[in-house]
Length: 121
Image 1 (cartoon, rainbow, N blue to C red):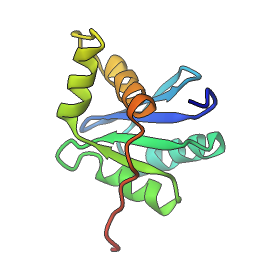
Image 2: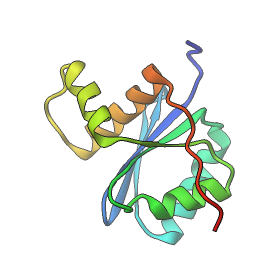
Image 3: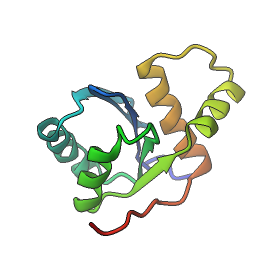
Image 4: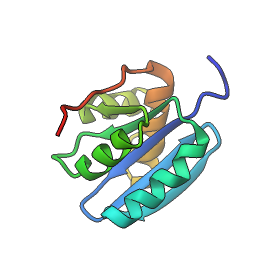
C-alpha cells in the first residue's frame, strides 16, 4: 500500500461531522450545516484524498455527500455494520465519535472500497 494514500473518514451525527484524516492523524469536527460543510471541503481538497468515507446514517450524511460530490471529491458511502464488524475484528469494542471516525478511515485504508456514485439532481 502507498503510505501516502489519504483516507478521510466522517462520523456523522445530526449536529456534527467528526472528520479523521489518515495516515496523518489529523482530526477535526464541524457542525453538520451548509456553511461548515463548505469549510470542511475547502480544508480537505488540498489533501487530495484517495477516498472520503461516510457512514450511511439515515440521510444525515446527505448534505456532505452532495457537496463533496459537486466538489468532485472521491466519496464512499459505507455500510455501518461492515465498519463496526471491522472495528470489532481489530479489537475495538469502545465507541466514541473520534474512535468511530478513526475506524472508518482504517476500514477504507485496509479494504479500499469502490467509490460511490449518486444520481443527478
